[in-house]
Image (cartoon, rainbow, N blue to C red; front, side):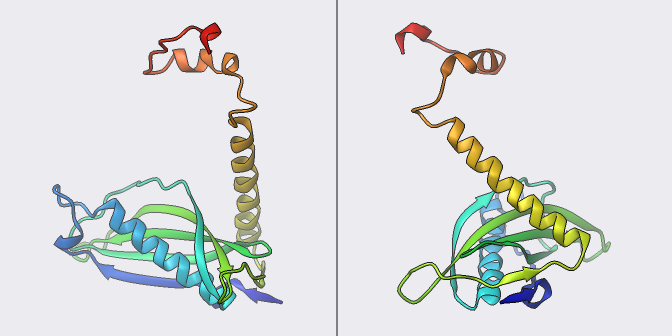
Length: 183
C-alpha cells in the first residue's frame, strides 16, 4: 500500500508565551524540541495508523531564535518510508505578528517506528513521490542513514585506529596527555 505525502502532513502554530522562555527572553530549545517530537509523532502515526516511537533525531541546528510573543509554526511531512520506519521532516518557523516577518528557525529529521499494541514493529505504507523535491528528500534520507551507519562503524572501539586521528585532534582546542604506546 502507498499513500500520498499530503495525506499525513501536519502544521501546528502556537503563540510563544513567557512560560516558554529562558532567562534572556528567547524560547527554550527544549520546548521547541518537545513540540517537534510531538508533531513528528502525529505525522508518523497519521501515516502509519499506528502508535509510533522516536528511534532517532538527526542533527538539530537552531538557526534563529524565537521571541516571546511570536507565532511558532511547525510543519511535518513524511520524507522517507522503510519497512517499519519513517523519516519525518520537521521545519520550524517563527512569525513576528507586528511586522509579519517570518524566520526559518530550524529543520530536523525524526526517524519514527510504527508499533502494534504489543510493542512490536509493524510495516508502514510506502509514500508516493510526485515531484523532484519528493525524490530529493527521499534520497537525502537514504544518504543520511548510510552516513550515520558508516560513522558508527568507523568509530566502534574494536576498529578505531587512534593513529589515524591524532593529527586531527592536535589542531583542535584539546590537549592529549598520554603517549600513544601507553594505550
